Length: 369
Image (cartoon, rainbow, N blue to C red; front, side):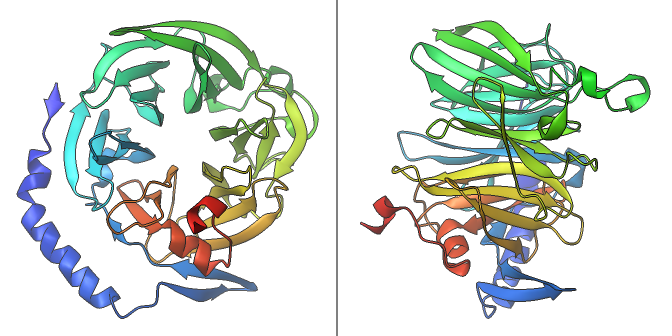
């Protein structure tokens, strides 16, 4: 069943007025400032806009899609509403809501992570224990996979392969009573699948599971993940408060631990969403959300060395789960945008050029031309 966002449309007049007032109040503010918190100083960057707020949806993850005809979409998962939301990625205006509760294709049970590749949307459903694949722009369900292997799936990342797609999924399975697994049972935290599209259906296969059971490569509490094919890296957010946690773990794309981690001593709270600002020459920046209800931060790391390159916070955005980055130029975003979930109920948008300029970081060489 498709929901056209009627309630949102009825409130659009009031929302527009509020957005105008917000614009008037904030127009005189600088794009970036410095806020001090104890001994730490963090650059503050003002959001271009925030989508209309609805905490009842419990917004979790975000992704972007750009059509050949010039449409720019920002997509989100709404965990408690079992819906997907579609916004205009340039303005934040609600376009549509799709889905509903259920286990049939086209419906969802607690959709969490999501990813877009080509004209395909992949959605992880925690309570249906599967990954569902839909074709854009019509949200046509093509199939699902993983229900026999996934226990408590959360995040995913997908890459194009020669004859289809490779999908990586984090599985946050627990012991009875919600207790974390023993170290010896952490060998299934990362699961890989592949699928091919055949017209209006897909053919999928399970490739295996992995995860270290000792040392710094353990994944006690997994969240988001994101890959980099150029440097053979899969960064996995581990938000556990153990000696192994509060960092991004670096795995190879074959599922083995690379012996490295990102952000030790930088992440103060919970590593959550991950995005990659990827330049054609292999340079760029990783971005990781450091989730907190008051002191939310976004940390940038050099793509090649993995060294910390800077941090910022939003003027409004806090308690961030998922983030998504696009380098596609759009109205109001000449070099692309970074989107971040705001406290379970909305999404804030940052200009990518403002982020890089504020942190004195160089953009990709191809963007200088």
